[in-house]
Image (cartoon, rainbow, N blue to C red; front, top):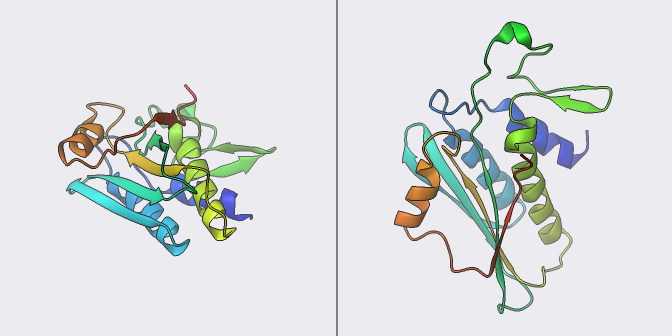
Length: 166
């Protein structure tokens, strides 16, 4: 399994159903993954089940700062009898990956984390500063975004790229 797919499968396998599971475990996984790549990253723990992660890589110049953003929680599984696979266990069937959060939106956040790690591992710098932010509790109350702002952890930026496909 290549690294991009491994990151995706790892993130999908961490249960992060909003208000049921510890969403902060996804934040901790992504922080650790990015730190192993040499990226400055941290987790903002809000409580025992909520946490955001923030990672930063400096660009060639500091004239532009872009935030890449996504959320790390998922909606509940619903009726498990309606699923053809276990929503808590990622599986690839005929080239498609199935698990809760595959589309909304763990794929987006995993892809952004993998891309940042790849940039740093290549020894290159992006043209501009990039901050990657993964917020918790997006599916219900927006606690993650609110706490990020209260703590002053959302930087002044020129643009925001959101990996939300829906």
